[in-house]
Image 1 (tube, rainbow, N blue to C red):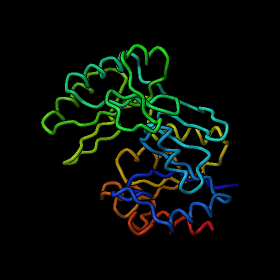
Image 2: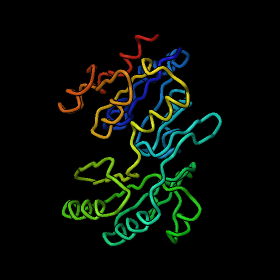
Image 3: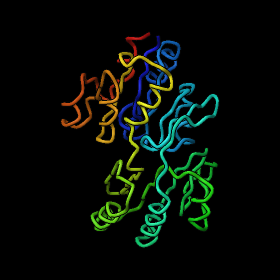
Image 4: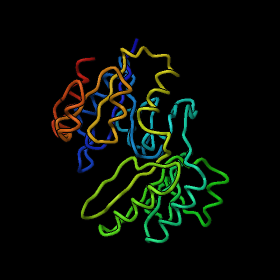
Amino acid sequence: MKKLIFSDINDTIKTPDGHISDFCIDTLKSVKDKVEFVLVTGKNRQKTEEFAKCYGGSRYIITSNGGEVFDTITRKTIYYEKIPDQAVKELYSLALKYKLRLILNVTEDYRFTTKQKYFDGSEKTFDKIDEVINNYNVIGMVFNEIKDRDIPKIKLEIFSSEGVVIANQEKSKSNNIIDVISAYANKGVAIKKLIRYLNTNYDDTISIGNEKNDIPMFSATHYSIAVENACEEIKAMVDEVIDSVKNDGVAKYLQRFV
């Protein structure tokens, strides 16, 4: 039986500057017949598939921090966890209040946004939030362009909204981002759904990550791995620490299966 390997993308197989090495690409291609390599990410479906093209793609992907499990071959959504409509409305108003760029990940091959940044078909703007809520399943909300001084206030208002949790927060000089998902969704829940769907033995499951939003993955698989560039808290809770993303840690680990 194939091993089922779940891997985060950013800072795990893709470096902070957005690079994935030729060695990593070649390795991912070479293990396709031996392992089922599943991407587990905060990205939406379209962007995840776009990234996976570099090594020939993964059949199964988990997107929006566990909001959706998708079969890229049959084009079937295996599982999704929708954000409550009322929470979507409240958080949309929050984005307008602070003049943020808001992204709505839905169970489609694109996402909605209040300020379009990409014009490759991955994003669409919308006029009224009800048009989205009434016609699509919103599985993730991403707040962009947050000012440093507004982060505590925005997090408090998100906390006050029923049925959602913050899945990830990235703070930098150029852009502050907060990812929000359903309170009933996370990467671990989505992984369990796929394991059961594929009827895979728990002993044949492995997760690889580097961030706090990857923690639910570790408890959902038999074996857990962190890359060396992960924080000490993450490295202390996994079964194995491999080389860093810059040194192709994941690719070197996958070479064992070649």
